[in-house]
Image 1 (spheres, helix red, strand yellow):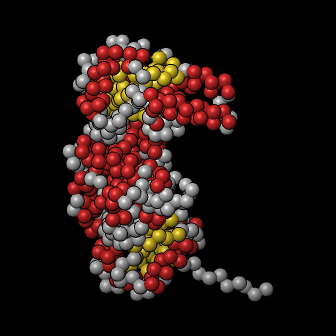
Image 2 (image 1 turned 90 degrees about the vertical axis):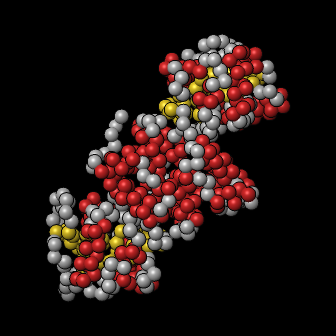
Image 3 (image 1 turned 135 degrees about the vertical axis):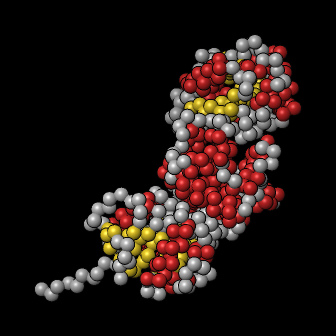
Length: 252
Length: 287
């Protein structure tokens, strides 16, 4: 019997803020990709799922850059990817806290970069926001669309703006809840209960902050405030303290 | 235990609270200054209770019992025996203050005087009486029979005893109590606001269109409905009024500034589902 040629698995290389790196390792490897990654502060990942390597593998099909918080680090990651990867390899980069257009200004091969929405816990959603830049040709967008399809996601093309859609709305909800807490208008428990039972929100704002991580929420709100320069994106001082102290919400 | 409830204002909210209380076995005096409004409210209540029997939610007996527990009245003095009086009249501070003055004079000293306001200061309403410790906000949300929560708004003067009696009363009605301090928008309207307002902001900047934003919030965010579907259901005029009240009572905090898109849609009569057109168009109530 002739041996069936087993095509080599396509390789995805993942870099960035650790919670998202772990999520995308699971997502990509469960959809048949060989995954290599480089991230600090990441727990033990099953070696059968992914290979940790500081040195970039040679045959990378897609690179995912998931950093939202440390933008200096993000820039270094993108510069390194741009240098090491063949010109034809697409870089799909989280553009929640810095626009994809701004990111493409950091690299030489601008047409390969497309932005997308990456926040903790969103890797399991069936839809992903994708933000092409003025430099992204239709082919790059198609490649990215095929990639997300291959991991079970539809894409929604949105304009390349900081905060995109879901992160911007949900972080503003969390910010308002933080103002309410700060003013001691209600307890965290009552805030979550009111929004889940009263408005059918899938999670309470405080629960949501816990799921996304306060530092991610703070990074999104800071980016909105910086980018849009509007008073309405002023961050609740309580929220800022929570993010800076690295702790979760203080339960009253 | 509350045995006698008084309700002032037989509009949609007043009548719905009356029905809820009557079904919980409470005697209700439903007061309205306008006899016609009162008669219409009773007809609506009768229809609503009959319908509950038709769909098997209530027995005919439960329905009849509840209806006989609602006593329509046009004189304030008929509220005198109430354990709690809930005011659900038009959102006008002058009218409410005047009403509370009369309620104070016409009820027992132990009667709790509650306002169903969602946008006015309970503290300001309480200032019209000499028993501010008995004044409280009880913010029932629309539709009253479906939404499980009621915001209980305390002023600096509201007594712990008043709050406890309100909590017990809401337990009688099967509602979940959300305790808030008297402040603009309490918490429900205030935290729902960015869900709608930030979506409008994103739409205004042409980051994505309304259908896309709704799809994203449902698929990515897990919301059962998108912000624009939600605005269409609530009514753009209703939501605009809530926003205006928030904006005004927060002394113009820019987070609560009404969005020009919403203003323009209200001006053009596109109020959402009820007018056949909002962010979506509707035929016979369907998108």
